[in-house]
Image 1: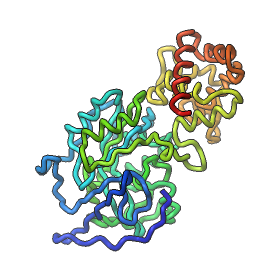
Image 2: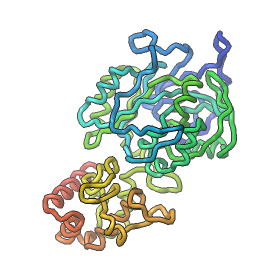
Image 3: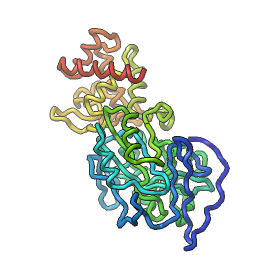
Image 4: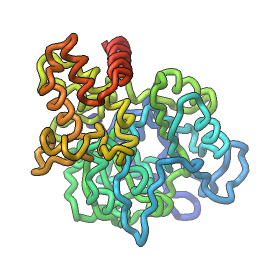
Length: 394
């Protein structure tokens, strides 16, 4: 993101008199609206026909939806649901040519080896402040789980989205000089004036704006034009191949775990769990980030299962409340040490391990991990996973 280009010409009008979305032009692995803000992974989208068609070419009765999965938070009375999990996206796929990804294809993707969660979203290119901007239409209560931890926990951001305001990436807010609480015209099939509800790191290369599903429908965004896939433990490159085979030619499928997509979040804060592990490890000289990553995987699968355990442990690093009182850290400097907040929990785990000698390595490291969970099998599992992380990300 951050590419400054000349603004595109105004979109042409359809014969019906309605405005239409500008088609997106695929460029290598990137998908870009003509003159868009970001260089990312958007595929070609064309919404010149108001009738949505399936891959078979027949009009759809209703927009297809992703199969039900464990990442579904229901908002009542227009309120955004609380954040319960963080679901790091491993793969993003976008359908080219203005078509939708069919329910059958989504179902096939969900059945790929080690795929745990799949979410489908509407999308398209709109104009904001005279610039093309790639936009996703999402359910704020569930989609927040797919964004970087710092953004996911900004409840006010998702509440604004639930109230049909729009949210942009931090870079878009800066480049377009957008101010929260002000209204701006969005040019698409219709041209509503929408309130800017806030900004944050979205974690999706090339996507610089989010709107609600209702707003997306009003703007004419293409239903189910993209899917995000979470596949813990899988090689993302393998998942990319599997998704690409299912969607066929014309789809852009991107490995979001590639280093070029792992940009730090707002204010230089880590934008992913891996970044958190790396940063927290620096507070304990001699401690490898791979040990923290291994513990995070064993304890909560990197925040996916952060609820209370049968023993009473809580949060992404599964601290006992009594232990947290002694070792809890205010990692994001918001004035509180929150056992459920990964920005606090991960450095808290580093502090606890360091206090037990983890930075000294060898037998001291073994002993420190044993103190984290009093079982030799646990220590051996953590060390094996840490070795695997070191081999994969050296």
